[in-house]
Length: 497
Ligand SMILES: Nc1ncnc2c1ncn2[C@@H]1O[C@H](COP(=O)(O)OP(=O)(O)OP(=O)(O)O)[C@@H](O)[C@H]1O
Ligand SMILES: [Mg+2]
Figure 1 (cartoon, rainbow, N blue to C red):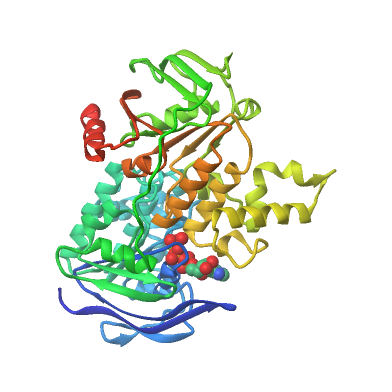
Figure 2 (cartoon, rainbow, N blue to C red; figure 1 turned 135 degrees about the vertical axis):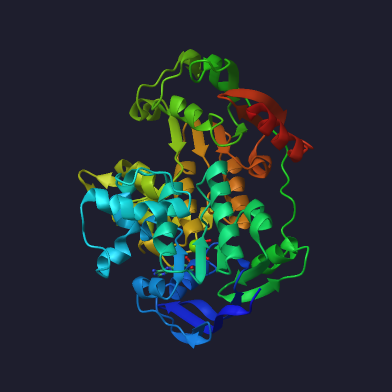
């Protein structure tokens, strides 16, 4: 470590009456990864947005290599070497432009690269892409890229500026294992080159893998700094929550009558057939590495994919949905992953986003009845513990984890036969994860629930039964009692190998 690249002194920021940063004091040394932990809404992304020129601080100051630094815009921060990969990835790229143009955006803007032929642009962009291990088609619009590649585009674009500080705000919450490993490799290289890194995550696995030091933030102040080896992550959790979080306890239920029955289900040609029964009142977690087939299972149940063989029944009747509309009509709901794309309407307020799937209930003829919608919105905000000022505020004013509570919460409010949740804990802090999990179990009695998660400790927190998938089939099944989670993970990895 070569001293503090960045020094933050007494930084404050409020949104109206909401004092989000209340005097942040923090050094970020060069050549080290500082992990920032904090509950949803603690102010992490707000701090990031002040550092990278999206927001102006109200008070305090930032020193970059000893000189005062108060960027008026993201472009100015980028020129000074402060590079940010945002939680909402599309803040770092222009989705409608192709990859090459995105990589060269800043040079096109400052005139150092002319808007030449597409071929010349691509040739100029190629080294930038290679430097970060981005293998995408340089002529494709960024909008069509998987999220991991869009992130790499944002990082690659920034690398041209000789980064001094790279900030990653929950970069892995929707990445696959392989994509996350590629990102971690890049982080290791940048650390070795003496870049200061600020890494925000709720995932203990990432934190243990990357952290040189851990900073806990609570209610807009730094509540703890942990630098001694081995890093005291339990202490950091305690500092960010203000208390100890005990073990999640649950008594696995056996479930009532079968809701979903799969016999000899073949998810794709060549995969081994399997049986699956999901009963009323039961919460089943399906875990396995990314690519194991969890997404295909969700697609088959929701009518977006066809199985290669087998027989499906719902409440005893044949079930082969040809579309999501048909699945929903039969009482099968899916809470999708990647909420920015699939689940939230950015122009709508919190209340309307919460009631989105059920708008017809709150409509009188063609008009919405705002009062009944507001009442339902308020109730759901309460039940899910969404941290917000009011249900009529824009959804964009919520922190990332609280947006996730909105996405999940609205589906729990509505009766259905089979509820499938695909990675419902993305970006959610550990306490909120427990809250969502508890709510999920409280509401589970009258339906069957399938939760798809790649982290096995998440499965253990919520499920009565845990199924392990690999190679598009189910390779193991456990009742969730006194489980050795390490063994379950090894089982998934071995079956995949
Ligand atoms: N543009 C905005 N307008 C009004 N309030 C905002 C805005 N951005 C953030 N807030 C509020 O500031 C507080 C902190 O939000 P922030 O996004 O910084 O949290 P976070 O620590 O990043 O949480 P998460 O882990 O959920 O991403 C929240 O109460 C949020 O509602
Ligand atoms: Mg955030």
